[in-house]
Structures are given as C-alpha cells and as structure tokens.
Image (cartoon, rainbow over all chains, first blue to last red):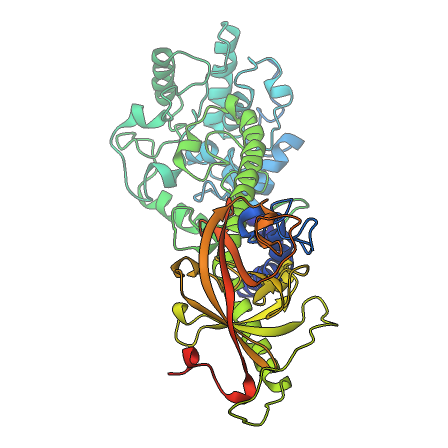
Length: 65
Length: 486
C-alpha cells in the first residue's frame, strides 16, 4: 500500500519525500486536534465525577437541594 | 510435428513468432533478467548455440502457439522456446531440428532440444570465465536439463546433442568443447551486449528497462522495485522474470501460479500495512493522552489564572476588613470564578475552578458541580478534578490527610476549609456531593467542601472523595492567609 503510494507520487524521490512528510504532518495534526479529542470523552479512562452514569456529566446530583 | 516455419533457413525471422525474438534482442537487447543478451543471434551462426540458448529467452510473454500445441501441457513454453532455439539457429540448428523431429517421431513426448535451457551468463559465470564442468552446468538447478524427460535420459540426450550439433550448447562453461569459439570472441560479444543502457525503442505497454543489477543493493531504485513485477514482456520461464537465481530455477509450469501469488502477496502486504498503521495510531493516542493533553491543559490553566487576576479588582489593603458577602449568580458554564490552593500538595500549588464538570471544563482546571453550593455558602461546595491526563490537577490528592488546609480564593475573600475525612466510592455514588453528604433529603446546616477524583490513578473504576468543613473566611483586603504565606 505504501509502496503503491510512493510509486505513484510523481517526481524525484526528494519531491516524493516532501509530499510524504507533509502528508504525515497533516495526518498528525488531524489526529491530535480533531480525532483524539473526539474519541477522548467516549473512553472510560478519564471519568472523575460521580453521577448516575458513572461518567462526566453536567448535572451530577440526583434530587436533593 | 509440423515443421517450424523457420526451420529451413533458420537465420531469417519470418513469422510473427520470430519477430518478437528479433525485436527484443536486437532493439532492446536485454531482458533485465538476462543482462548478457546477444544482440542478433541469427547473424552469428558460429555462436548460435550460445545465442539461441539465451536469445530466445529475451521475451516470452506467454506465446506458445502452434509450437506447443502438441506438447505436454506441463512444459509448453519451455519446449517451444527450445524449439525456436533449435530452429532459428544456423546449420547447426537445422541439424538439431531434424534430429529433434526425428526423435519426436520416435515417440518422445518432448522435443529433444538442440539447445537445452541454460542459465544466463550472469548467474552462471562471469564473462570470460570458463567453467570446467560441462554436463552439470548445462542443466538448470532443478536438475532436469530437458523438460519433460527423466534426468538420466536427458543428460544422455544432452551429451548426444553436444556431440552431434557442434556447439549447440548454450553453455560457455564447457571448456573442452572444441567447437567453441575462442574465448576472446564471446567476451567481446558479451561486452558489447552487456551495455545495460536501454535502447530508445520502446513498445507500447512495455515497462522501462531496468538498468540496475538487482544484486546491487546500493541502487535505491531497487528498494522500490517489486521483484515479481513483470518487466517488458519478460515474464518468461526460468530465466526471464526472476530477479534472483531462485526464480530462474522455477520450472515454467509454476509461473502462472506466480501471478496469483503476486496478487495475494500484494493484498497481504496491504493488510499488514493497514494493521501496522492502526497500531501506530493507537500508540499516538496514548501519546496524546499522557503528554499532549497535559501540555494543552497547563497552557489553558495559566491563561485562565492570568485573566482572573487581571479581572479581579485588587481591593485596598484594610487590615481588619470583614469578609464581604459574595454573589455568584450569573455564572455561565465554563466560567472561572475561583482559585483553589492546597499547600499540602505544593508550596505554590493553585488551580482555577470553573463552573461545570464537563470534559471541557475539567480540561482547563478544577470543575465545580453545578448543583452544589458556592464557596462559603451553607451546603456542600463540591469540586472535581482529573487525576491523570488533562493537566492532572488532583494528581496527588491522595496525599491529603485529616487537618490539611484547602483555601478557595474568590474575587473578594479567602475561604479556609479543613479536611475531615475521605472515602473511596463507586462512580455512581452521587450521595457524596449532596448538601449533606450521604444523607439524601436532609437540609444542610453546615458549610462543607467535597473534592472528588478518580481512583486508582490510571483507571476510573472508583472515586476518591475528600470532605472538609469551612474553618474561616478572610477578606482579600485584609491580606493573604497565613497558610499561603511563606
């Protein structure tokens, strides 16, 4: 797969390398700024509040004052 | 067996089957798998044995038409190639052609080749070097010199052919073959055909000539070359398509499965790469959680603290000022309104408190349960904070002990709480943040504080709870609390 991509990028191998590096950086940015923050609340590792569902919620109290 | 169209003259390529032969060997001269191709075999009658043996292998994209029609299906290509080798030679070829036809008529299944398949020079011997083992060297490594025939028989046949046909043997390894041209000539021939540079003539659909020696690992192009990819019409038998000697050892019968194998291998390679990529992404997620969220959160917390200190009006210093009543109404979700200090956790340990306990709020500091009381008010002032990742404000909360001081700083006052007790509870135990903890429905009379975080640190299976009560309130105009000084 990566060999196929490499072969089909046009240009000298330095040009190809620049494309690959740019693509990798773009993928990293996409992951860290959009994908991972989206995944984060859906995983149970970071829940610190007490509520009925066991996760983070705005309304943590049920009943009472 | 019908006479081959070119069997009479032998030297003129007359048919379509022959034209590829001339085209490839004359125009391009090289099959990348066989670098020492002779240029125009039909013009070198004396060397036709060597030439034919290798020249026929220049390009064979699977053409084995009428030549192979009456041959056993297992070795059609090889025999046709062999036949061409025999038939396109010169006088010697003619002899062998008749001999071949005679033997075939005698009932042998495969034509006895005038030119048994020989290894390309590059794999067999370097140019100019003569190998002194004649019989063994004419056989391909598989050990069956004549396809379709048992080894002993074929070896005998080879020996016969060697005697009767002068120098039909493709091997230049036979040092004691008197009919062999002097050593100088093949070297000269090879040197001129060793020119690896691709000719300018290219045919439609051909791939560019490969100029590099596949054994030369220093050639960076080799790193990206698929050794199985068919080259310019060169997906031939034991010599043509392979980049490595082991390919040349394959009998032709297995070449077709090689194409399927190549597709399957490509799919397997793609699946493997995808799996490795997914693994790397998961690893990157761990890096994100453990490092990147802390970086982001610390930056956000610093910004919030700076803006709070900027927005809070500094009251004039009045040493005996009474604590002013504060109104916390109108706080939107995510708004910062206080700073929490815990001297036990660090000399200058302080974190901003934001309204709300969603992930956004918890990522920027300590969150305040929206339905719980405000600092200094009757009821339970409950806050929550991350223990791992996202800035980890409550990372060392387990160090708190009874009697430790927690100071909540607001715009006007310092609220001094003292820790009373702690407990580990389930995540669903919402009673810990009730106005009267663990007493649902009871009206509060005391001013309490509750701190919650997850337990154990790297998991969220439980919650760590600390309770405290309000000890004193001090106006900001009166100065800084003693616990925070020094």
